[in-house]
Image (cartoon, rainbow, N blue to C red; front, side, top):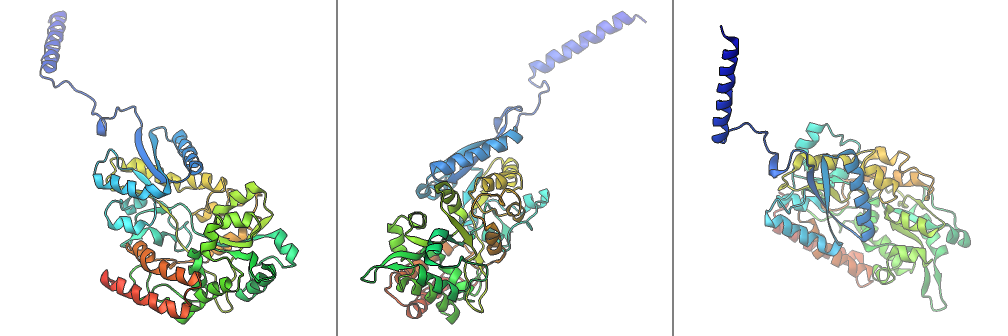
Amino acid sequence: MNIKRTIGVGVLLLVVALAMSACAGVAPQAPAPAGGQAADEPVIVTWAFWGSPEEKASHERVAAAFMETHPEIKIEVWHQPWNDYFTKIQALWASGDSKVIPDVAFLWPTPQYAAQGVLENLDPFIAAAGYDLEDYWPGLLESARFEGSVYGLPRDIEVNVIYYNKDMFDAAGVAYPSDEWTWDDFLAAAEALTQKDANGMTTVYALAAEGGKWAKWVNQNGGAIFDDYVNPAKCMLSDPASVGGIQFFADLMEQGYAMRPADLNQAGGDAAVFSSGQAAMILQNTSRVSAFNAAGLNYDVAPAPIPAGGKRWNGAGGAAWVMSSGSDNKEAAWTFIQWLQSDGGGQTIYTQAGEIFPALQSVANSPAFMTDQPPANKQGIITEASASDVGGFGYFPEWGELSGSIINPGLERIWAGEADPATALPEICAQVDQFLADNGYPK
């Protein structure tokens, strides 16, 4: 056999075959990535959130930290001020264009948008990743569920505690608040801390609290807003325990111990009046810590006082990271969300910056939160969060409309001193019950 001749013929045939294949346009090629993206380019995840320029800068630092450890994913920011955010993001969803729809968004309230079909059910991602939901504070995830499924992971938890000015307490000879403080103790301290002029007008208030904090007083006293917070059939604000909680808050204003919410807004909010010494205490979440520390205030925090025979209560809720159902990059979006909600990831970064009280119990009990920086009594915040219970607001899609059109306007009349709770709350409940019936509740 002529081996050289055989090899030569084989090579010739191979060349011809390759040439014919190329002419036919069927030469083997590597498959192109989805979306026309080159194989070596990172997947782009669009991240939507609201906030001030300072908050935007904070989120961008978090995105940069993520991309350092996940070079295969690029985070592009879509940011709007609070007043424009919800209108504009709904317009993006309504467009149906996956090129402009954000992959991940900061959102509240989650059930409302889940009902509209614009959010992805996270249950399959959670199950596939073995993601631990037990690390969240009790009841917190209820605010992000719809029809039993998780549609968002709350970044933090609304933990309202008493901030108190230690210098003002010392000057009035009032003992600092403790975990055992009752409503009676609080009233005694409020009387001593309040300063009035010769005409009986308050010049320094014991308390400055937003009107939206009313649910704490109601639930501490054993009251409630609804008989069921997911599928309500009846308003409970006219029950005696609920009326008692609202009456306690209203009486603080009537006696001049607490600023009326309208006056508080005019004065620049609770942070402004606390910093300027116009109020000895505020009832607020941990969002004020970084500002008070920067101002060098001599303050601390304590769990809110509870009534005799009442219970420690804190509403479980917080804005959540969600995934758009129209996203083209869901696996990458989940990778980012899971990192945002992890010990060592976003939860730790936001907590170390003093910007949140974390949704994860493990982070709250870690050095990220338990630092040497004020407030000294961080354990008091954990005590309040540990008592969190489901029921701070409605966990159903129409809650925003109901609270904005009926409940809040009715309560504002009480805070202004224009109506008494015993009369106004039954009227509010009658309207709430009609709203629930008109919207098919209970379902």
